[in-house]
Image 1: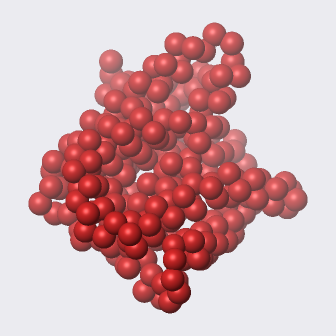
Image 2: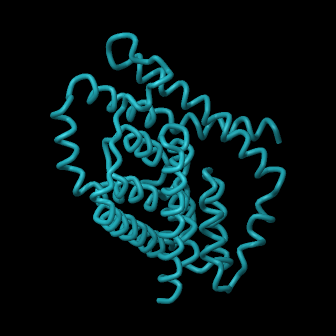
Length: 277
């Protein structure tokens, strides 16, 4: 069990590594070379950010959610764009559906629903919080690490990536061991088939920052244990390791809990609405 948990943690962390480095490299490049012009460019593009974020997030892996958390922590994307990526992140769900013949309509409906939910929620959030934007800067991520003591962009990006990768590996390993000992059957038992509370419980399960949660939700949906609305609630709340990266890199910490609450409320609301229709 320990060996399997180690291998899974190593595999999950390795898959995300290129996205983390690319995000940090982008942050460093903008900080060193773009300056105010880069900030102006991102502020203009940011109005369409939720749509772009929702589309990129539906690609079946959680690397984009990790990258989005980094970019938000560095002040390059809006809160609405971040939530759009989180809500549309599909992780392993689409890959599991591809393994089942005749699931084309289900995949199309799943992706369309998550992109629509992510984009609409992102635009609404950006509109509601348009006068409450937090001033963020990449320097906020570098107060204690000393990564800017040298010149260039590669060394600081590598330092950030190495620190975050090590933290994610330890976090993922611990979570894998917890899931192995607790058992997915127990986690699926409290979902409450055919009850009004199922979307609420499914969203809680989906917020576990590990692909195992999306695998379980998808398998339960295919087996008839979850309604489509509940599956959407769980998969929309599931942002992969994006939440773990957000809590590691973004400050202040209370803002992260507010984002977590917003993500949960939107996912549950979407799941309940789809269950009704």
